[in-house]
Image (cartoon, rainbow over all chains, first blue to last red; front, side):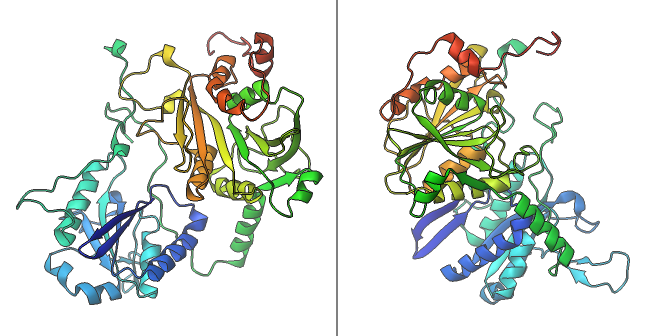
Length: 188
Length: 281
């Protein structure tokens, strides 16, 4: 779904909510189409919110924040060292052949769907894009969504919040009844 | 996934593994993928008369699509039961659950899950589609594009009747048995007609062919209304079919209908489950 947030301070915000899964055989095509649309639209920056399997973390990643970021070279020119100064952690690369010393490093985002594809295509097309992702597990991901959003808000200030407090976000209707309908009263 | 009460449900993972395929695919892999894609392609076969007029697009002012055995049974009983309908085409496709069609040019056998098109003899701008076969996720977009690609978009209006199990209906209050079956509606923004039952409440969603058709109509600004019937019966059932009766009000403006049917006629379209075992009914 594509949402237009309209104009605010002469900036136009578009938000795409990719709710359905991508067919694996169409993933590359999806990335190419998306990237060419972003390029043609001329967005000054693109933020990709994503996640990765928490169980795939290595020993180092188990410590500290579950939040990571990646930025394309074009985005680096826009933000400079801002994200590093905010003490955000860049997504670590993994060894192509684990256990083999001096093995090449590669980007690996397990459970991230088209994230890696979109990121690498954006690098190739010089698109200012930043990926913000959270390590999380299957299940009720509502707290993870808030963690990710609050983290993003510390950079983009989408919503004002009183100091030391989290902003008040509106919960979407699609989050209601995640665990099914009401319980039959006769059960108790 | 564990639910709030601690029971473990096996659900499809919403996470998708990154594509590990190499950028330069083996030739053999490409051939296999292509062969699978060809096998899963959706084919729309029209009768010769209609195929000829498809040089332009088919004039259609009303497209009525029934998805599921009860919706299809309702149309068979109340609409297609008169003698004024011609079978004009069918969609053939193959997937793991619908193994129809190695026989693309041959129409499906009676009783076989299928996707059939009928046109009204006196009012050829009215088209009915009965879809009782399973259409996989990767085939839905193709089906919609190919069917609507044959139709003139101007002046087109769509109605979808769709079955759904009541287990998939989410409501904060417990749903008592007597409330089932029931209808809910959803419209595209271009539809100005009054829906004949309450709108589908959030957070309920549509899936499958009804969702694909309604999405297509929304994107292309085609007036469309959907009536989803939530039922607790899996097989075709006369009470569930009768739940679609409010849709008759719209249909009667277009074509002659059978307003009152005897129980015998409805029974013909409903399957009576044989009592092979009393343990699992």
